[in-house]
Amino acid sequence: MLHSPTQTDAVIIGAGPVGLFQVFELGLLEIKAHVIDSLPEIGGQCIELYPDKPIYDIPAIPVCTGRELTNNLLKQIAPFGAQFHLGQEVTKLEPQADGRFLISTSRDQHFLSKTVFIAAGVGAFQPRTLRLDGIEAFDDKQIFYHVKNPEQFINKKIVICGGGDSALDWALYFADKVTSLTLIHRRDDFKAAPKSIAKMRELCANNQIQLLIGQITGYELAQDRISQIAVTGIDGNTQSIPVDDLLIFFGLSPKLGPIADWGLDIERKQVVVDTEKFQTSIPGIYAVGDINIYPGKKKLILSGFHEAALAAFAAAQYLNPEKSIQLQYTTTSPKLHKVLGVTPPIFE
Image 1 (cartoon, rainbow, N blue to C red):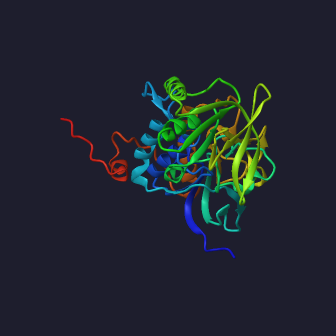
Image 2 (cartoon, rainbow, N blue to C red):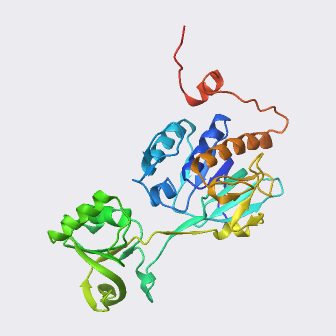
Image 3 (cartoon, rainbow, N blue to C red):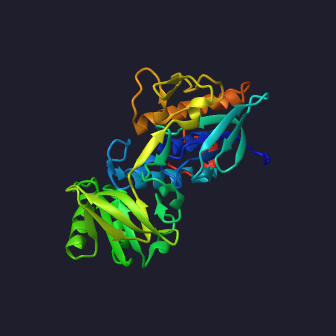
């Protein structure tokens, strides 16, 4: 049974930096937006893949981390009251007779929107999973690909798999909070912050973390729960490790997913747009950021910001075809000052 859909002027698919800036550009034009993302946290790739790594090519910001960029964008869009719907994928997008779009998500939420902005990066990110027969039955029970509630792992025997920032960050966090902690990576080469790697090796030397170089190749059950895992090292030898919970950080795999079925022009798994409006082949649907393709396309955050600005103006004209949309400047426009809720200083 279809619940009554939320009606809105704009739905943004993707809560990464470009999706967040799309909220800002729409907000300046007094267009309210709902934002949907498959990940459980706002920030897209910036938060999931490099939250603490430096970014050097954001205009006027010599250096910032992915987390800092996300937090600053959230501050910037705060006046516009965007509503976020996280941890759910858009499964259907259906044009309606009145020109609006009915959007459905994997959590059975529905939106009826006049415009749609696809800012989904390179697609919906899904965690790369542990590949063992039947292991998926333990997802969110003993196998976790995101840490939502750290308290649930305290005083347990945990195993962390992975060699990136997420794996090491959580290994360092839990080292003195659990009964035992085993870190497993397929090779003795870690792609994480140097300080984190150094601290992890120090804790290994002090026997607070057990480091195993190899892969999980099997598991044993006791009373319908995983009680032990088999780890096969690079030397071919296998050992059993007792475990209560496993935290898996193998990274994320982007998938175009349902977007491919929405009737849009697709080229090399990217959405084709024009460079005037960043509109797709369907009027009222726009694509910004890494998900789109056009001649000369460069996959840069700053390019996505530019695209979001032009898409917002195009959408404003689409929503109000009889109205002339004037370009105003946040420095001097009283109307924009009101929208932003700011009082500019008076210069004499």
